[in-house]
Length: 149
Image (cartoon, rainbow, N blue to C red; front, side, top):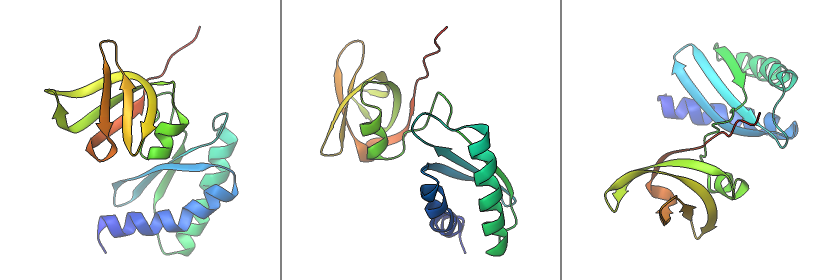
């Protein structure tokens, strides 16, 4: 079984549990053969109790399914990754950083406010102009956290 197959199998196992707890699976990372990091989120943010509860439940499920990982469950933090179109839709009006696979007008890194999404095109308002980025051209994207004091 390839790493991608294992990853997909784990997603299929754990995502229903996370959804049943009114949370969202943001990402999973197989950091090495023995270490799995799961990132979860929910409206209003994830608490330490949420992470502990999901860790216990998923840890038991994975062991029963034949996986033996050191498991970490965490919140996405203020620089939350944006992985799906629905992530961009949810965070319209927020500041993000997008790295593209192919450059747009010679540029691969864009920072600005997510303005809208039209037919899988992310429109981001940078300081100098509006940029249209095809979703499938996005290599990596995340929110840019704004600390309030």
